[in-house]
Length: 190
Image 1: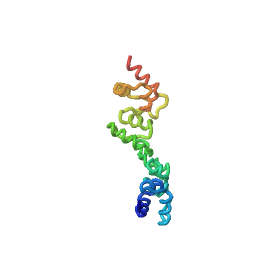
Image 2: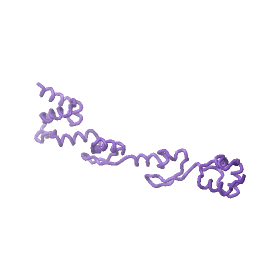
Image 3: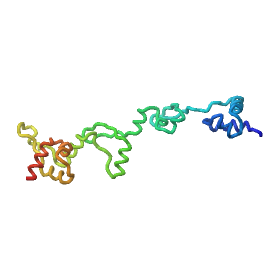
Image 4: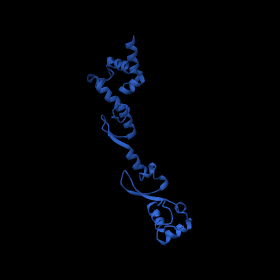
């Protein structure tokens, strides 16, 4: 049986991951004979285990083991690059603070027909809801001490009927103390 030495060399060049045993099995020879042929042609005798890869986020080249090539760490040079790749920076509509959101959360919200997040916290969301729904403090009572804050009771009741939320959640969302909300709901029910 004639063994094609050129074909063995080409197999090593095109498939650097193949072991000597695998190449020898394909051509019907021993791994030692394959090693001698590769060494005489000045080719690499050990199978390649590490590869140079370019980071998807920063573009730096780094080397990685073959077993990790198809995992997450095979695409990014560090965790910092992975986290910055997987997150989007958004600016809060109320306070102007920049915050990050996972891209998977944005995609999930869009699939459900919801808008992407616009606020950095529940407090900012509550402030926005208070502005748009008319729950702000009456301007004439801002500077007067001892009078207390006035809230639009009708709008509190309307929002409670629409959402079915309890006094705790209404208070957190609107920025009103929950005891005040529970008093408003209790008095309106009478």
